[in-house]
Image 1 (tube, helix red, strand yellow):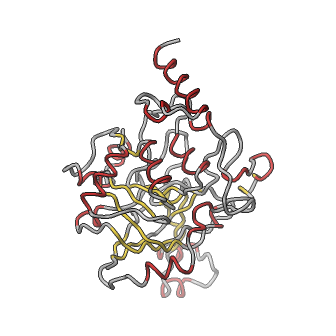
Image 2 (spheres, rainbow, N blue to C red; image 1 turned 90 degrees about the vertical axis):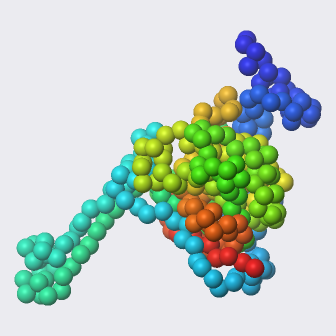
Image 3 (cartoon, one colour; image 1 turned 90 degrees about the horizontal axis):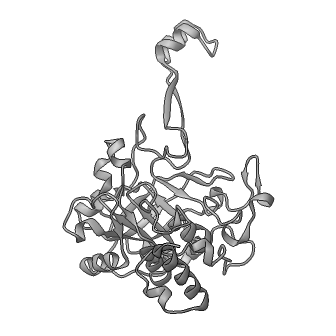
Amino acid sequence: MNSTRLCTLLVAIAATLGHPAAQAHGGHEPAAGARQDVGTSPWGPADEIGRLNLITPASRAAILQRITGGQVYDLATEYYVGMPSWQDAGDPRYQFWMTHTPRGTEVDDPMGVGKDMNATRSYTGTAFSMYSHTGTHIDALNHFGIRGRIWNGFRADEHLGDRGWQRTGIEKFPPLVARGVMIDVAAAQGVDMLPDQYRITRQDLKDALRRQGVSLQKGDIVLIRTGRMKLYGQPQAYMARPPGLGLDAARFLAEEGGAMVVGADNLSLETFPSEVDDDYVPLHSYLLAQQGIPIMELVALDELSRDKVYEFAFIGGPLKIRGGDAAPLRPIAIPVR
């Protein structure tokens, strides 16, 4: 057994016994799935939305009454043919095509209304298709699980049918109205964009928050800026070796910061290769399956960074795709006083 695997084994044993060495070890983390199962919801056995239960009439009112009425920031990306998208698992690219054009309807007369009517009432129609995790989007809690189970113990062999998940589908998400916080890690480090494969640490987040003069609160939507969105118009460059959040940083947001949702301006939130030996997506496993925290990706944060807007009312919502594991999102940020 090599030294790395031996260290991993010892730390896994220490974690099981509650030994502090599990917290102090600086090498590879043991796999989250190896030392604990999926999370059980504190909101009961029927819960399907995890920490989104923190959205209440009182929490919405608390942030909305602080809106200044100033600029509204659009945090969504554009969809275009050739845009950055996840391809490593063979998922389809974004496709867009014309179904009706003004000249074409004159020729084909698809509605049977005649050439003169078609020439007068110019008709345009389009269609598009894409993988559900394309562009600015939010992951449902069924996106990743552990050994066939997802958040709150729902099981693939019991709750997943031919038309998607019967539990925790993205259509169950409420409209997202909450306090938003942007943690500008790139700016805190004095760069426009973090280096390729940079793994953001707990200390990086703390340093950025201190620099911004912002504290996290329970129920926040926390968005991490790496600066990667500067490459959004260059799909291959955007997708190649992106920086991302480290597992210990995610634990800080979830367990100390009380984050309700965690997102970033990259695609995948975390960076690769994995820091965990037997989990290739440890942040997805930890946040979605164990903590009930939805993940947002490809959130456009550069304008907030430019104007140094770190706290805001976040307003948005996913498409209600029944049984879906993710959906496109059109979020906005409105500064608060």
